Image (tube, rainbow over all chains, first blue to last red):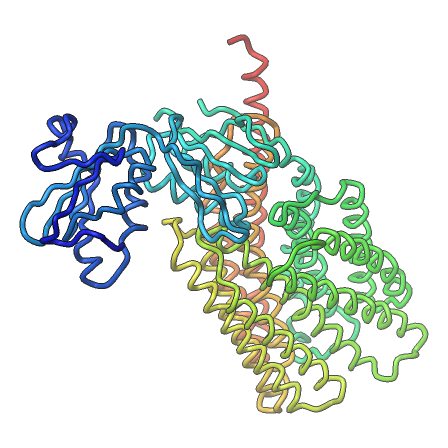
Length: 205
Length: 430
């Protein structure tokens, strides 16, 4: 991640819609911000080690439900990140805690406007995003048994609310026994052409 | 209650229930016979060097009855699912099964009684079975690429050549046209054991092991390395056998050992990153199969260089067939049978059935310990030429095989009970 604004610069704090916010102008939602239930990531160690933290932030942000919260600690106000998170449906507000420590408060206001990213011809992993009807996972283009592995990984991760919508190239016949083993069930949904779409739900205990 | 799953387009990739049941059921029965038969050939086994007789009959009960039936059944069912292709038609599968079993029965009987007519009569049905099978697998591979494609494609080419050699060997008993019967028999054994079964196992492992362990499939570079090493090994071994150059044969076995090491390393890395927490007995069998493969190739290298006693040829055969191939195939069947049953339940639009609920763990334990004890005793008895040890091993292996049959029957019974219960639920007023 790069930043146009470094500690000590005069940096604007950008809201999700691009409006400039200052510490004196915090958003109203910050008053009822659920810090205890927030997903958290401190990217200062990433940056200190010269590692790009954006993927980790997005991975953490994707499963956050609407109304859910995310807190990012960074050594500066990560201005470009505000726009990225806005695309994922987050309102953001950056606050300077102390020298070399900024905190970005993020509230998910809506599901992503953006469609799931376009898939390259030979994708190496599933695409996961959150929709109104649950967490979606797109495993199209992956060769067997990767779709099975990716879906089971998501189910077992707990990063869902008991419902997952899976987008596949074909019926995952090997998945059904694994679902039954985990007390999950699958229901066919209407999908795009050449797509099999399944709603996977955890059965009541 | 869990809702039934509509398999929709998956149905055309699943064979009708009775097709895998026929192949695997035959394998389960032949498995018991193949172990028990060793007790009756215990005295001759250590010095076996080819030729018709009870030993060859016992070995072909295993190769045709268990290994080929399992490999045919598994690949005809698993490849359409893995490659997203239509499964072969039921009629084609039935013809493959009927000709394979007929040919196998005639050949085994012919070997047992040294009956030339029976052996010759086996050739046609076996050639038909293999030709149809090769045609179907080639169709499934059309349009695919990557390591799996090349492992399986090379395997079916090796099978085609191996069965043509087998037909020539059978005809040779009547016509006597082959210049060196023993050489052709050795080439047939290498092509069938390492060329077909070996490459098929290495190829299908790329899908089955990640699926069983719920793990990321392996990266391609190590698979290509294993493929290149295996092909080079096969070419060297066949050339060495054909030209009667023992160092070349030994070099082939050594390269085969390196291919096996590469394969085992790759698969161990896959299993290490698994999501499945509990490893069943099938993974112990998988480990045993890898150990047996490595030992077999070391023994084959030493035997080719004349460093082992006369019993080494039989020892290599036991390690390859009962150690490597039988261990991995019974391990695979332990997972596939309940999985297929669960998929068939989904196909029947009934309540999904968890595979573990179909399995009687006690049966699998009996099989595991019987198999490992049997394998150890038969291999040791063969190496040191002690028939009593081989008989003890055959008894243990037979008990293990009966345990496996118990397991398979349990899966069948519990699946049928589930389907019947659910059918009654659907008929009863809610």
